[in-house]
Length: 217
Image (cartoon, rainbow, N blue to C red; front, side, top):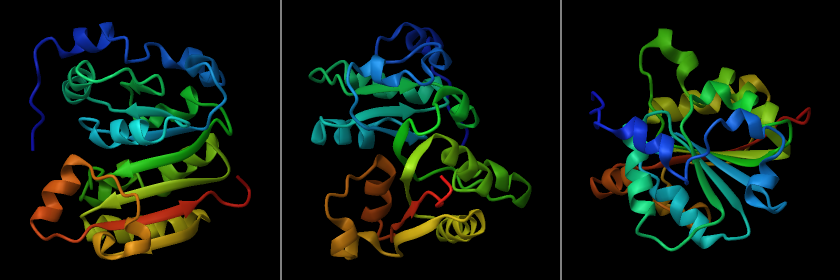
């Protein structure tokens, strides 16, 4: 589906106090941005921000950064944020995920969330898939020792691709399910995204895996 461009989105994002401008300047110093040493979790491809916003509300002891490449999508999260109470533990970045190692230092991130990522179905685009080994290498560069990546999708092929890539890259699969909403242990505390609500209402199973950084991490 073609992304609809919203006039004025670029300007609104550039002016928003919720969006960190020039994030590369804060590499290795994100604790100063938040004013504390709490763990930092990021969501790569946050969409309209429902998931990460709810996570920030539920877990004030964790700092969250939502990452979205497209200003027209991020704008929706920014607009909703204005109507909420202050959340000092949540900021946004408008960047390409390939820049992650330039923005976060080694061991600066505790957990990464990938929710309903673009499947990039053509084989020649496999490197663009967020659970690919190329991206896993980027995540490894910024995660703490034993850091985690949590990945949810309704796309079985992408899910199985992610499991295969984790094995190839030397990551440890700590948990996985082909039916998240019917597996009580993994579903405990689950926060649904907009897509998750949409697909689950249609009866589509939701797949989830939790993988741990390689021992060398």
